Length: 183
Image (cartoon, rainbow, N blue to C red; front, side, top):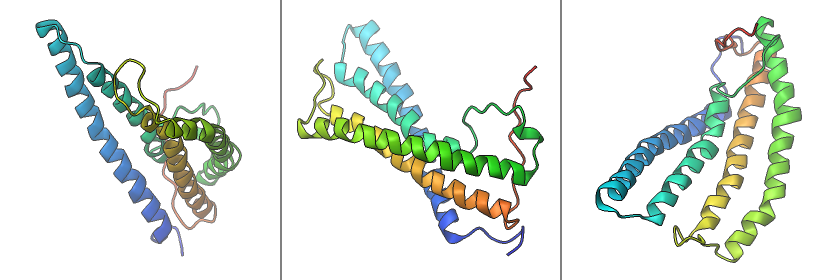
């Protein structure tokens, strides 16, 4: 394979999955805005408050950020301090990304997943409910922690495959995203 060879099937599949989750979560933003608008109209025009609707916005907000993290990583949208990164060659950037994935992303994801497992499990065991009479499924909200870690670990696998192929010269590297200059 050379620099114009097709991506391996596993990498394409992982990328398609992450993109699909990202697109689905993007629609949640629209739904969240509509629900928030309805909450405001009900509260200020009719004097009606709904804890369930208010908490649903919080749940959707959490889902957007937590389930969209892997898609953001795939699209290089996370904050990065790249004083030197932009000036590196494609292979140099691939090495930085590969090492960052191996020694930062994966260990942090595993640490959070292992550390959160008991917290989420306990919530499921007691079928934790909202103390304010809102959504009776706090355990689902807490489960987003583990789902986010799983999605990030899948994307980390895709990153490792992609960066290895770039380093080997099998895949072309995308130019670094255009970031603001730091003075």
